[in-house]
Image (cartoon, rainbow, N blue to C red; front, top):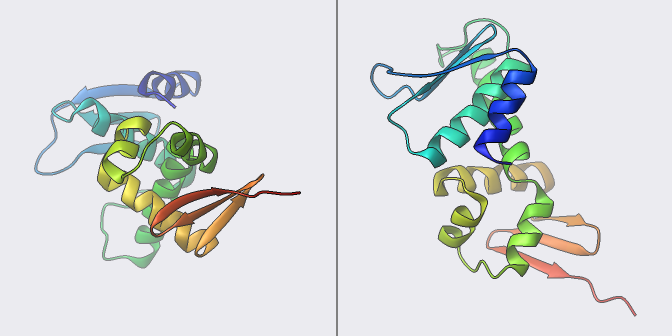
Length: 153
């Protein structure tokens, strides 16, 4: 999914999307039907942040900025899971493997996500599925990342 496709999702949902200046290390914010992204981020970071902020739009309720609250941390995680699933679906990991991606740096570049986002995504999938997930005729092992095709006879 491209940044432009994410912006289109926002427009289709009538979410106002703005690139703006934020204080400190804040990368993005979602409030009601408005999403703001720090304009100083790289294009790849903007894509990852916009996907997460869309996740907040769909999954969170109220002000969850205070991460001392367990409820807020759970809502933050739901938004991140939305972003992981949206930007790095399992089928895309298979495709990337067959396109020749051999390490996390190449894979992150191929997927147009940050390496940190990719590592978090793989951890999310490992937490969700265990050591591996099966997709059609493939097994995707998450640590180390390995894609294997089943050979049926």
